[in-house]
Image 1 (cartoon, helix red, strand yellow):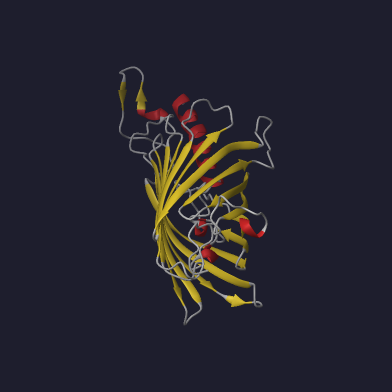
Image 2 (cartoon, rainbow, N blue to C red):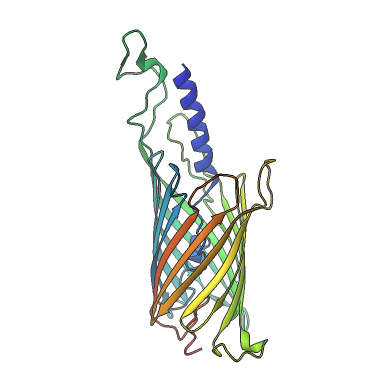
Amino acid sequence: MKFKILFTICTCFFFTVVKAQDPIFTQYFIVPQTLNPAYSGFLETTSAGIIHRSQWPDLNLKVDTDYAFLNRWNDNLNSGIGGSVLSHRENFTHYNFTQLNLNYAYKVALNDRWAVRPAIEVGFGTKSFGFNNLVLGDQINIDSGTINNQTNDPSNFHDKFSFFDFSAGLLFSSDEAWIGLSLKHINKPNISLVDEKNLPLNMFFSASVGYEFLVADYLDVVSFPYETKFMVSANYMNQGQFNRLDLGSSIMFRTLFLGVSTAMNPLAKAQDSHLVTSVNFYGGLQYENFKFGLSHDFTTSKMGRTGGIYELSLTYQFDFSVKCFGCPNYEGR
């Protein structure tokens, strides 16, 4: 029975973690559609990319996440259409999560400067967990030291299951600024791995704001190229008991960008919670239409030597003449 109790505790903890958080990228400005489907087609040209995230590589709890996307703008429909695939893997539990999403955003002009983009996202996800090596208490024969392959436990565990997902977003934008709101998992899909349980996935709310400007418009700079820009952004996210606030700033030259951000837990509910959970540095290079990004998060909590979190990103934008938020190349603007 001790094994059964232990497994129950671990399972409850695992389900709580899964229920509480979606993967969040430090380089959210590279893949903003992970937070809000209204960013689909936001650059009003075709763009594609991939980002890899590795979390706590020095621990047995290493988590790897990959995200790939393709967005396209249609002038005739005044709409952005996008597709993406997300893969999330936990090494310790052998937990795997994969989701395919389709996004649609429609642009409505409010005036000469501002536009609003309502958007929807539909997704199909699969989750799997390695129950093959699970041993329950009634399978252990202490007298003979053997393990029985059969169990009388009434729970029916699924190694794999799938679900449909629905999300929506809204984005207000001008040439220099943007304000976005989104709500993911509106249908609260059941993500329980046990037949008789109902574990709805908590809705994920996010609010993002950003502003970028030419440094030369505010300062008399001589050593920097005229195209040098500065960007500030903030993202607030809430899902169940989890909340996070990211504040970041970056400077963008012709072919180089550098920045720093901080991840905070503004509504900490545990006594030992930290207000600032990590300090993150990122940078990258641009060559023609390609942009390469690298970031590393330095954890400020007392988790010990985790190895932090790092991300690698590679994106391609077909045309820079329309817009390129957070991008050091401003030719044609």
